[in-house]
Image (cartoon, rainbow, N blue to C red):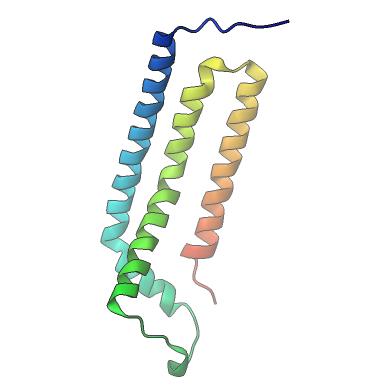
Length: 131
């Protein structure tokens, strides 16, 4: 039994336009989160480094280029992690009209669980200093 899709090209272009709008909204949230992290990144890195117990002989001196790469990499990673809950919300909003009730509950639970796990892992590993 063949099923023929009833979507016209207008429906597909509207769907792709919605995808573009959601990606654009997430990217703006990612940039905003990255800008906020940029303000505090030096304190975050120095607090994180000072939480380790090490001798002066164990220190590694980075070149300015490597320091900037590490700094901006940390900013991008933190911005991505901070914007994931909003991206999850946008994914739910995008796929919601096409789901059955049991699929909707499954997706909501899955995205909620993954967001909770990711934020818990981030806060335990990165934000809490090691003793």
